[in-house]
Image (tube, rainbow, N blue to C red; front, side, top):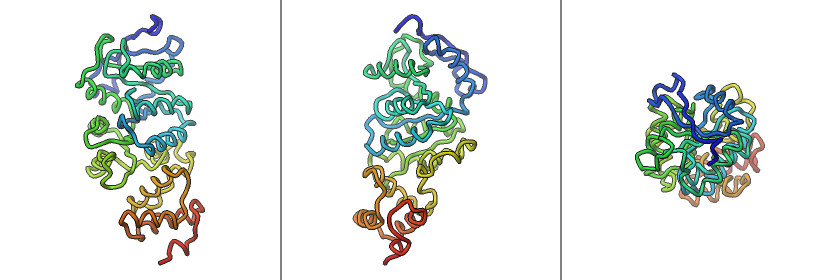
Length: 302
């Protein structure tokens, strides 16, 4: 670390009093320090937290990539924890999409944890982002500090997105902090019973989070730009009556990188032990809009 970007302490605005963190340590490049203070002044209103497992499934990463690419013309700040997995990809895709991103660390800023993300930390700084921590610069990572850090990720943001969380995931702690701090929380849809997404299902079952179908789902938080987001980011909003079928279709598209024909979708759907009625309801609007191959006659075929 160069002396020019050594950690400095910042007094937090009064709007963050509920975090009980009167000051934070910050690292950013000198040429971006003024920009840092300007960005801090826009939070939590422009903050979007993105967190999840350290061992994500391919479809979670695909969903994340599409989500952040859809947000590239907004002024949102992407906040995450610089951990491996979802956090790493959130920072990387934010930078690639031209979005500002901040890494919120549990340990002090004299150290980067995990060490293999040191190049990513430097990339965040060079892109105009920042690293933050409430721990003194020399503090090493300790388990309890990660749980404390999660409240900062949630509290600095207006909304938190959980991409993938297992039954015992730190991302669940971030979601609960979002709820405690009166912030919105969204979660990527999943199939019932999927072990890798057990935390997602738990948040939905406990009504701690809302479905995240794509960038347009966030329009209920940031109304001023919602209408300008790509329609395909929210294909399944027309089928709220059958969320399992809608989640199946979204997953199929992510895994196959294309929209299925109705016949293809139906075959896989029934193989999973489902009846076709739910899938018909979920696809009817897609076919009407010309977003899926097929016809209304096909979707009603017995």
